[in-house]
Amino acid sequence: MRIGTVVVLIWLVIGVLAAAQRDYFSSSGDADCAKVGDTVLTILAGPLNYVGVNPKVDCKTPEPSK
Image (cartoon, rainbow, N blue to C red):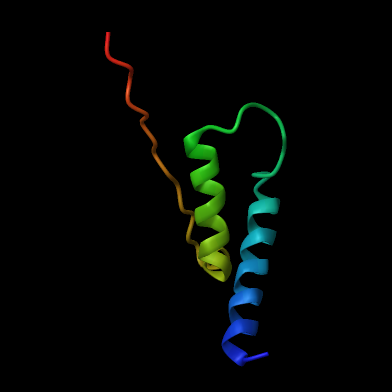
């Protein structure tokens, strides 16, 4: 394996650990846009979560027209 692949995999594993510590994988409640977005951003932020990065998503879904 190339070193870049290993670094990316380790980065994402650290992000998954951070998301798990924040209980983003708990099955309580429905998965809405903000919860899914927070989980994905936390995983992508990886080790940055441990130096103060706390990514949040503010989703607003469009209302159906009447």
